[in-house]
Each structure stands twice: as structure tokens, then as C-alpha cells.
Amino acid sequence: MKTLRILSIVTLMLLSSCDPSFHSEPEFVGYNLYLSFQDIAGNDLVKEIELNDSSRSVKDALYTLDIIISEPCWNWDNDIYNAPARPGFEPDVNRPTFGLSRYNEYSYLTNQFGLPIDDCPKQEMLTYKIKCPYIFGDDAVHELVTYWEIPNERNPSAKCYRITFEGNEVTPSTMDKYDYNYTAAIILE
Image (spheres, rainbow, N blue to C red):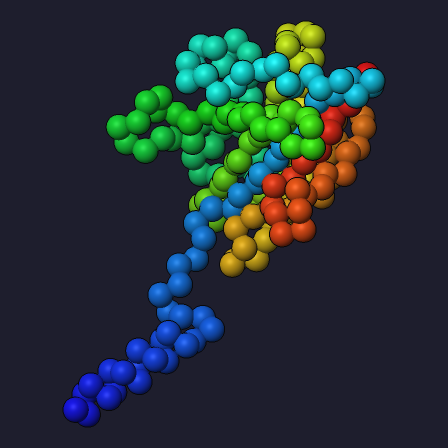
């Protein structure tokens, strides 16, 4: 009976604790970015892109994306994103991709990017190198530099507070006050 009482007290203490010992810490910092590209008249330049096709060759024809981090991790080459995939997965190297989303009547290229907390230095600046003739009208690589506030250990989502693109500064916003998905409208002149 005494053993049962002690076990009940220990269980109650673990379950009522504000910081239970079984709480798992986040493994990745998330950088969630939604980009709308518009011309100066406000026309949506993203709306017709079909990025949800599972064929890699179709995506490669539409765009290429590299993400450059400010302080490379042990498994990182800033010339091309090359984080190894899990064993048995094809391709054996992960490349960043865009998704497609609608918000406030505009289409957005979305990227949910993550870096391991333990294996990488804190990344406060990410450079997105984007080649997309459909949006930009050329075959050039365009750079978008993003600046992030790094969360504490319990919050795995970084906060984007500034974006620069071709000499222009953009202040991103969240979709709502509790959200860590940052939206930005990039105006192409």
C-alpha cells in the first residue's frame, strides 16, 4: 500500500509540473516564408504557377531555389543546398522547394525551411536565390535576403522582421498574431 501511495504521489508530481521531465525539446528551427510577387499595378505574378505537380522535371522547368545560410552547418555547402536525405530516400540530397498557397486574394510561393538546432549555429540571415523566368521574365538568379530573430529553446519558429530585394526593403507580416508564417509582397518594377 505504501509503495502504491508513493508511486501515486510521484506520478501526480510529474503530471502537475510546469516543466515535466518527459517534455521533448524541438529539434529544428523553422523559417516559414510566404512570398507574393506582384508587378507595380498589383497584378499577381504567381497565380498561374502549378507547383503541386509531383514531377521534379516540371518544377525544375518552373524555378530553381537555393537557400544560403549565414554560418554553414557541418553538412552544408552554400554553393548548393545539400543536406543529406534520410537513408533510402531519393534523391539522396534534399533541395528546397516552394509550395503554392492563396492568402488575401493573392497567390504565394511558400517555403517551410528548417535547420537542426544542435548541429547548426543560429542563422539570423538567409539568402534565397531564385531563378524563375515565369515571374521575373529572365533566366537570371534573383537574391532575396531575409533577416530573422531566433527563438528561445522552447519556440522552434524564427521571426522574420526584414527582407531586402534588389535594393528595396520589405517588412513582412504574420498571417495572424499567433502565427509564425511570414508573408511579404515583393513588387517587381
